[in-house]
Structures are given as C-alpha cells and as structure tokens.
Length: 315
Image (cartoon, rainbow, N blue to C red; front, top):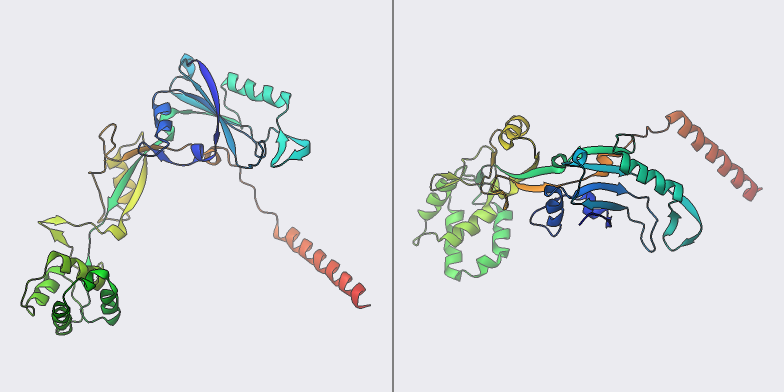
C-alpha cells in the first residue's frame, strides 16, 4: 500500500465509532497500525460545503519511531482568503502553508499544532451499567387506569376479563404496594382465573413506578435490571474495566453492576470496543470572555448612538 492520503468529513474523525457501526473500518485501520497522521484542514476549502475536513495519512510501512503512534496536526489556521468566493469555497492553502504542514508531518515533533499519541489512546470499551428494577404499584391510581385502558394490549382482553381486573384493582385495601409479588398475589386472590404473563406485563407497565424504597424485582432468583436506569460508560482501552467501575461508578451508584453479556465481538472481552479522535479535546485553547466593564461600555455607547438617532428622527 505504501503511503496514501484521503480527505474525510468531520464525522469520520470526531464521532465515536465501534466495531458494529458502518465506520468499523476505522477500528481496523487503527488496530492494524495503518494510520500515520490526521491533518485538520481549515473550513470553507471546498465547494458547497463549510464542514470541517481532515486528511488521513495511511501507510503499511511506518518508520520504527512511528509504530503504534498517530500524529495529529492542527492546520486549521493555515489558510488565505480567495479574491472571489466560489459558493462555500472562500479560502485556499498557500504553497508556503502546504510546505509547513509537510514539514510538521515529516518532523514528527510535538508543538502547539502537532501532537503525537499512542494508537490505544483513542480506544475505549463501552460498558453497559444496570441498576435493579424496584417498582411500587398503585392499584387505584386514576391516571394509571387511563393509561392502562388506552393500551392496545388492554383492548385484546375480553370485556368480562377487563371488568374482573378492574374490580380486583379497585377492591384492594392498599393504595400502594412496595412489592411486586405481594401486589400480584393480592390481585390473584380476587380473581377466578390466574393472571397470565401478558396481563402481568400490562399491569406492571402502567401501574408500576420506580421507587428506590420498593423491593427489588427478581426472576428465578436473578435481579431484574431497570431499562429506564440503564447507563453506559466509556472505559479507556488501557484501563481495567473492573478498576474503572470500582473507582468511577461504585462510589456514586452503589447498586449498579456491569452487564457482562455485552461483549466485544472481536476479542470477547466485556464492553464494546470503539475509537474516538476528537481534535477539540487536544487542541482547544480557552478564550477568556471579555471584561464586563468593556462590554458594559460598549452597550452604553450603543445606547447613546440609538438615542442620538431617535433625536434626529423626532427633531
């Protein structure tokens, strides 16, 4: 393959991509150590588009000093204005600026506009965090009844079954149950026929609400996760998933756990591997806001100008 360059849109660089996405090829490029450098170009270089673009320098013949590394070059300030705009193309890169970019690429030295990274610095494992399903049930809540009646699953029940279920709900002595099993048992005591799995699912959907004080729901002894509380964390590829979880998650969400069934298709380890190369993270320079006194003075000057114009109109 030798060395080749490709111009890519911003989404191919800054967005997070994993092996299951259409950009899974980015992972292949990085893990095979084919990516030598990425150069961030100025905007407004191309016709009919103002989006940020990048040059990807690919090679399968890296020098020894570059193996396992990726060079990022921020060339966004390398531009000159065109005498006449052509659509969105308002800028171009001069020969001198091109030479400077090439010099930085060849030098492979750190500078304010050039940074070198290990390939794995861009990698992470996306782990799925679960929390227990804890539901309080409200058998007599009017809003819950309305939602239940509006569900298509409710319409599939026979009319006499609907009447029986509503009667059983209305006949409960408790306004609130903190145990799912206790709720369904109490309901079954007032029904001739047992609750079907579909009916339980329907009732849980509309009468159950998350309550941290409620009993944890289990199925065959296994804790059920609450899909509404599901969360994700991106663990740096170089770091242990368990160490990261113990340090960053457990102290804040003690009842959370890692769903170990979500594993990477390629290496079989917990967490889906992805890569993210975010230029702003590495080259962003903080610009402090202007002093309030300056802004206030400008506003007062504008007010004076407006009042002067009004004076001329009304004179």
